[in-house]
Amino acid sequence: MIILTGNSVILRPLQQRDASQICRIVNQVAIREAMVTIKYPFSEADALALIQQSNSEHCRRFAVLLKDQTEMLGCISLLEIDKVHLQAELSFFISAQASGKGLTTEAGRIALRHAFTALKLNRLYALHLTGNVASAKVLEKLGFTIEGVLRDRVRKNNQFYDVKVLSLLRREFVE
Image 1 (spheres, rainbow, N blue to C red):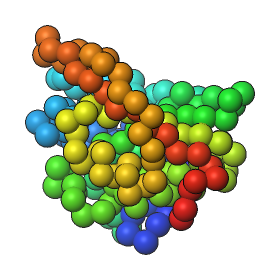
Image 2: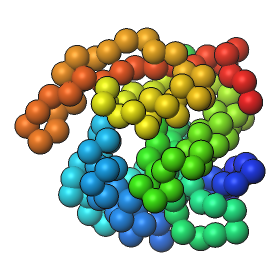
Image 3: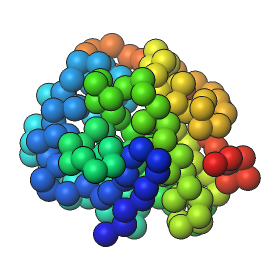
Image 4: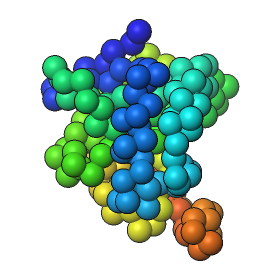
């Protein structure tokens, strides 16, 4: 099992026992409104399915935890890992209670280091709803550059939303 460590947080692969904590976090109003792709309501069966496909050749999802604690704070993922073009999507969510403390940024740096060194990727991209200020700040702190806006890309609650696309190249990554 790969465990990645930082100053305050560790990242470990998702496990079946994380299903109820994933549901608790994803079903928080602030989180579900900010998510691009996760449906609501999000059931324990949905969480188990997400966990089941979390550690494959094309997907790595990690639980974010404070060091020496067992409660999951959130999840950070490398999705659509493309070994031909050496790229992947960075995706994350963190509980409302843990938000604003720099933990997502720290987890992001750990995931970026893993993507660029262990997985030897060249490019990471990320998507976020244009109104998701918290994700925009995290991605800016991580060094991502805005590439553009996908207009009406996401439909939630019978309304369409624009999504920003950002990227970071290996040569731009600063630890």
